[in-house]
Amino acid sequence: MSKRKVYYQEPYKQTITTKLVLQAQDEIGRFYVVLEETIFYPTGGGQPHDTGTINGVHVYEVEEIDGEIRHYVEQPIEIHNKIVGEIDWDRRFDHMQQHSGQHILSAAFEEVYGYKTVSFHLGKELCTIDLEIKNLNEEEANRTEALANKIILENRSIETKWITEAELSHYSLRKVLSVSENIRLVIIPNFDYNGCGGTHPNSTGQVSVIKILNWEKHKNYIRLYFVCGNRVLKQLHEKQSVIQRLTSILNSPQGQMKDAANRLIQQSKDLEKTVVELKTELLQYEARSHIANIQIIQDQKVVQAIFKNRLISELQQLARSITSLTNDVLVLLISENEDKLQLVCSKSKEVNGNMNQLLKGVLPVINGRGGGNDSFAQGGGERTISAEQLMRELMEKSM
Image (tube, rainbow, N blue to C red):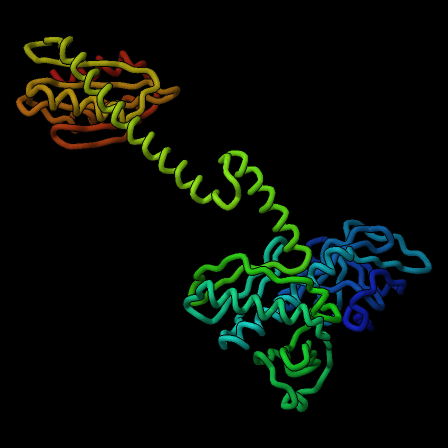
């Protein structure tokens, strides 16, 4: 068992020389070491674990199990007279910024509106809090964010204190504690008193800045996304890069990008509408062309056509156009698409027969699926036979 959790007393300590207590493998074969004292923070309280090295071997996970802090390493470490551990400081400080920023933001929501935080998640890119409310508007978010950044700018101290359960009555805690022993408070005087086992900087100024990004409804809460410190700069850089590219694409300055984008969207909708209208006109022309070349087979007028890589939606529209222009024609259309066959069967009012039954009669040949009604049916399946063979099958069953 680790004798001392140095990350609590000295959260800024980046390296440590200590002694090895244990080196072993867990039940699934992962190598881990236990040190006499450690600067590696284990996963807990919404904060992810530290990473780093022990005697040069990568530490990829840290967990506290039954009071024992296990440092999971990629391979067994070489045991020398001394054990040297070093944490990934950029990762640690990022976690300190995000965690303290969450304390400040949650306290600000409670200070301004009485909105309570019910959970916190510190992600790799973004952080979230779940607020015990059904709705949140922009004015509320902006006002809370402003107070949070005011607390940061004032560079107030962030203190940690170990207390007993009997001493709890001296503090106005933001939420009920989940423990009754080894109680650790993180305090921003005259603003926030909160039970917490995470690592924190020693002043609010080191959080640097808080930025609320967006929020959404999640179950019965509002889930709010935010970033703090260096992550704000990263977000700003990424968003600025996107804006710069968009100003070039839209040929418009940043302040007019919304109008330019709306114009582009409207132009796209207008073009799509024009394309649909032109396609409809072309299909009408194509339908008349097929009608002009109708075949008479056993006293039945028939339009039969085979296409390559034609959309089933176009076959449907073409078949309906043909049957709407003449009242005594049978229409059989097939499209050959790579390894598939698709087909449409349609008839005018005065033609006998059931198109759904006709379709179902040939689908087994192509391991197909489909359906319809008396006058119109559609389906498709595997190209187990050629399109020409499938057309012959249709003709035989329709006559």
